Length: 295
Image (cartoon, rainbow, N blue to C red):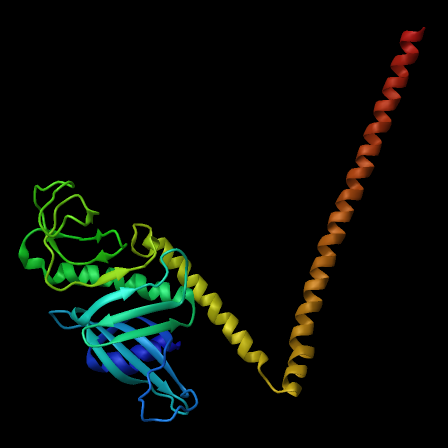
């Protein structure tokens, strides 16, 4: 069982919730009370999790979960509803980066994810979960659909809207500085989550393909971390590991490379012999024709 499955089983299932995504994070700026002396970095892991309740009406929740050193279980520390999430800042809209900010009504958390792919997976699932949640909360307002605005600062706001006859060039109060990304005028709910400085591929139509790509990148990053952790052994263990398994893999790869090289050389030699025979036949034919026409 992987870490995400364990968190879901220990933290969310007992509270009748289902975890949608989790990302391991570290603070970019550690919070510390001024009257406490600076100490070493705490021996614990922090995860930011997105979950939804199984009972209706469904609630979308963001939970901070910690796992302390020497303890096998996970602990729920803080929890917010999605209505308390005011803004998600992706930091860099031009390239993948592990940094992101979560701004709530009463706090601001600045995080660094374990990898850029893990952060992109979290932001992408959070964005679409907010969309689905907003649509579900406003289902009684009438015919509603997805809402997405982008203002000159590159902000994307989520909410719900009614279908109207207003066009794209509408200059109604409150919408003069916004560019409508949907075909219909929308009515904004009082509270909404803004996604700023997020790459368009995290919120665009090709999100499913991007999600698969990011999951593959995250998997490869975990494999790399496992390999690095295995190399951090005592010198004796590392030497035995190198001589037993690593050398065997190196020898196997060298044998494969030599075999492939030998096959290519054999094919080249056969092709050369074939060309020599063809050239000899051509020379013989030319000589016969020359003798025939010389008579």
